[in-house]
Image (cartoon, rainbow, N blue to C red; front, side):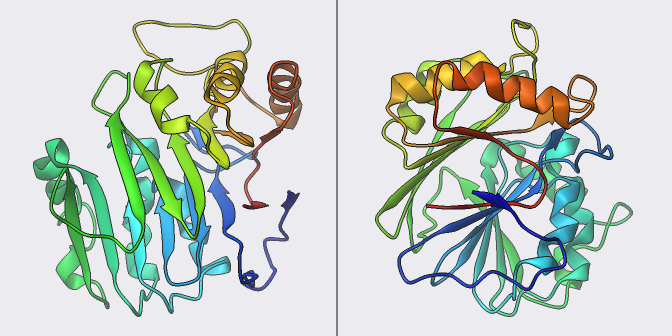
Length: 263
């Protein structure tokens, strides 16, 4: 795992690897430490994007847009969708599919419209929605389960090129998080709270909860992201979270914007 130079050319995939690039790693709002949460997963035949915070604006530094792209939204809190305003910046030559729980159909269609932003029909490429659960078929395996938060949140478990990638964000510890994380080659979780912090009225992970999930699920690797901007004001704060998590689950990294991880 290493941090990519933001000026580097789009990464070249080896024949049997997935590449995960953290475009934004903050929760709530942007700071000098990071943009809000968005993650790119580069695959052989397609690319995935996990959430669309302001980090999404950096997508063209890493993506050549020559493959179909599937954008999965965990929920519609603004730090996960503000980057959708930048979709007009890109040219997805093979199209873009935005996937989210059907409970948000009305709200997302309203958000991706005037007067807020360019409507999907006004983009210079083919773009559309897929609502979960639904009959949409994807060129990869995906399981989605509801998580524990203030509003409906979906966690995802992907099976791609023989690898399992689990994405569990904006949640308290719950059975579905454990199901999604089970045996994952890479588990990506949030780390909004600091060591020892907890708020049952606004459920989120702290570093020890994320590490506990990875350990109990038998995950191979863990990456922490979605660090609350008001609590993690600099890299030193993230380092302390990493040290806390590592005492429970050694194979862990704390994401920074631009971090690249191969599976």
